[in-house]
Length: 439
Image (cartoon, rainbow, N blue to C red; front, side, top):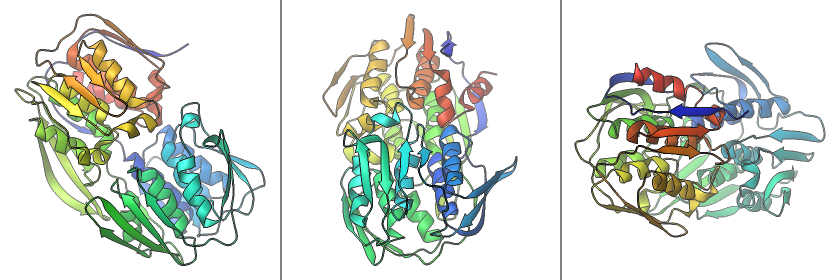
């Protein structure tokens, strides 16, 4: 039977301090890089979600020993070319696009074919966008319908440098090629539209052969073949994308004040903060520090008296790509018309998120006008509803579920939100923290 979350009341005002689980993007990258490190890597506060556990299961299939206890996760790396596995293995990325795309970069020199599968949602997503550049290294791919999972990859003994232009602002595509580049002879050059840069920062911290030249719209990344990777000891900071649900919930709740501790505020990930500040939300970074090349801070949010509409610059899109469903909710309560454009990439996520964002707004009674990649939102500062809303058939997209919960607690009505288990992919204790705010 489908698990349904039911919400009947708005959230009362609150003043709280909370802790959010570890950053998913960093957690998955830590697992993958630790698997090819020379020696034992350890991580505290690793996100124990289905996506990260799928990453751990994947490297175990490739012959890497792991150990998890209450305090930490331990990975016994075997070096750049240390994977040992049986023929005809299948790796299941489940719902994780990050895992599915990045791990292919590590498999471009696999001597045996490896099959990659995923769940129903991931199987609909475009893998040609990583197969094409990785093929230039010398790997061979067989994809379903020429672009989907399941796919089969066969590596090459002769991995050669490539030149690659990543035009979409996809950190997953960029990082997949970056992982392949450390196995290739010569220097690989990547020209990439700006996107989150966790892989670059990890490479720099590990002193891998990388240089990054920043241009106005693109980064020029040069990576040479690595000799070895030192073990990674890491205390994973909290996830800004997960924190975003509580940032927005505070912004939409009257007389509320929230502090979120130890959050990764990587400049490539804080687009939502920049956008919300432009809309009049009070957000302050406190106790800012640098940890292993990443920027960390405590975030304090206070609910505003009024919210301003925004004509959102598309230059901010890549830094907020996972948070636009939430930003749309804030625009719904803004004074005036908000406009968002060049968001086609939203429909390349776990579900067609641009369409789902508009659907949720329409259920709230908000007028919208949309095109393939843009959305105009007619805000209502007095927005409040008193009706039944049912959210289902969203391909179990965890962000659609959690955004719907924020909408229910902010605007009222009776909400029946299906696929409660979808949060296990990225934020298993989301509803537990919601209960903390209610108490």
